[in-house]
Length: 222
Image 1 (cartoon, helix red, strand yellow):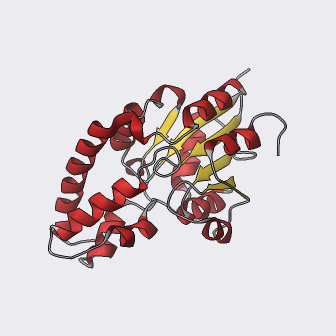
Image 2: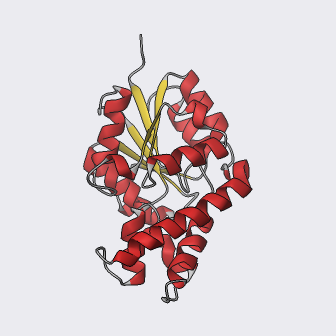
């Protein structure tokens, strides 16, 4: 019988140690268009769709044609960085966590604000694509985080029920999305948001590592 236990993960800052890299490249991209932005200013926007972050941080607005050029430039520089750093970006304990969850009968999806091709590329480079069943990117839904669309699509593709499903993420927007979708929400402090912000956004539980996720989900149900 196919398991219906489902856990959906964010990618950046949850499975991959990419928050500093994203902040650096988004800041550099916007600065190259004449608007000085520091990487620290990018962190609150991590987890939101790229176009939204670029429009907000640059002040250009969502319909400005420069946003499209920024997206292209960012993706080019980001892919070069990912190709160079590869599995160095995998957060500690993540591969063991995903393997243990699969062995315990959990269905696994990655639900991210990245486009699906960019997410798949990163998963391949950090060496965990083979243990993830479903990948849902921002390009597959009408409304990105913190709207619930991506989580609900991930559950449909897994053929798993909403009841008992978990969403695990490092950003406040992840918790907001989980709450909007009706899944249980687990925050993790390996990325963009501190414990307090994750709890304020609706996290039922906040953990500090992939090992703690394993301890919470493998074995007796919590």
